[in-house]
Amino acid sequence: MKSLSALFVLCAASLCSAAGYGVVDEADVFKKYTKAIDLQADIRKSQETAQSAVGEREKALVQLRDELQGIAKRAQDPMLSENGKKTVTAELEAKNVTFNQRRGELQTFISEAQATIQQRAGEMNKQIFADIRTQSEKVAKAKGLQIVIGKGAVFFADPTLDVTEDVIKELNAVYKPAAPAPAAAPAAPAATPAASPSGDKPAAK
Image (cartoon, rainbow, N blue to C red; front, side, top):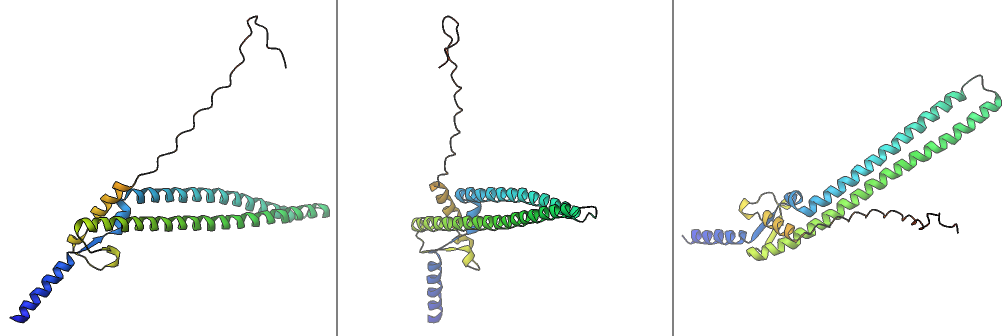
C-alpha cells in the first residue's frame, strides 16, 4: 500500500510539474504572425527582383555569345584577305574578353544576391525568435507557467500544453507595420509670364 501511495504522489507531482509547461509551434507563428508574414513577403520580392535581373543579364549574355559565334564564323571565311583576317581576329578577341567579363559579372551578381537574401532570411529568423521569446515570457507569467518550449525541440507534447495561439495574439497586438512612404506630390506647372497691358511681349533681358 505504501508503495502504491508513493507512486500516486509521484504521478500527481509529475502532472503538477507538467502543468507548468507550455509549448509553442514556431512554424505556426511564422504563418500567422503579421511581422513574419510581412518580412517573408519582402524577401520574396527581393528574390523575384533578383531573378528578373539575372534573366536580363542572361539574355544579354546569350546575345553576346551569338555575336561571338558570328564573328568566329566570319573569321573562317577563306575569302578574307590577310588584313581582313587580322581585323576579324582582333574583333573576336575583344568580343571574347567582353563575353568572359559579362559572364563573370553575372556569376558574381548571382552569388551576391543569394548571400544578401540568405542574410536577410537569417536576420528575419533572429527577429521572429526574439519576439517569440519575449511574448512567450509574457504568456508564461499570465498563465503561471515555468517553462515554454519550442515544438521543434520536443518529440511529443500534449495538445493541452500548447500556448501558440496565445503567443501569436500577443505578437500581433504588439507589432506595428511600417506605414507606406507617402507618394511624391506632382510638380507644380511652371508659371507663364503675364501679358503686359499693352499686349507687347516682355522685353528681352
